[in-house]
Length: 175
Image (tube, rainbow, N blue to C red; front, side, top):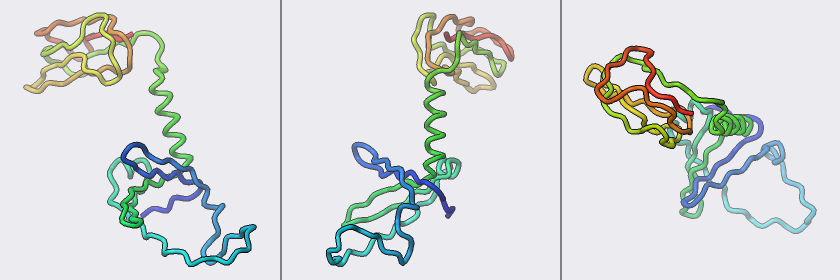
C-alpha cells in the first residue's frame, strides 16, 4: 500500500453519480488530538469508525497512483477511491485539453502495416467522434481497424475495399 500525501481527492462511487471531495488532511486533528469546537457541550459517545478494506489495485489504479477501499457503514458498502488531488487535477486538465481537439487543420491517416483494405465504414462528409471506426486493413489473416484520431469530418477516403496498401500509404483525411 502506497502512502498518498498532501491534498487528497476522495471519490465515493454511487449508483446515480459519484461524490467527489478534495480534502486537506492537515486540517484534521492528528492521532490523540481533539478537535476544538466553540460548543463546550459534553461529548456523546461516538460509534467506532468503520475500517476500510484495501481492494486489489487494477493496472489503471497503479498507473494513476490511486487506491480503492471498500467501506461498510451500517450495512451499506461504499467503494472509495483515494488519490492525490494535484495529480487528479493534472489528469483532468490533460483529458480536457485532448478532448478539446487541440489539432488545427486536417489530419492524414497513413497505413501502419501493409495489407488489403477489408472494410470501409465511412465516406466523405461523415461526422466522426474520437475512436470511431473508419476502415480496416487485413494483414496476415487479421483485420486491423483504423479509428478516428479525433472528432471531425471525413474529408477524403483514398482507398476502396480490396485495394492493397503499403506501409505509409494514405488512407483517409479527417478535418
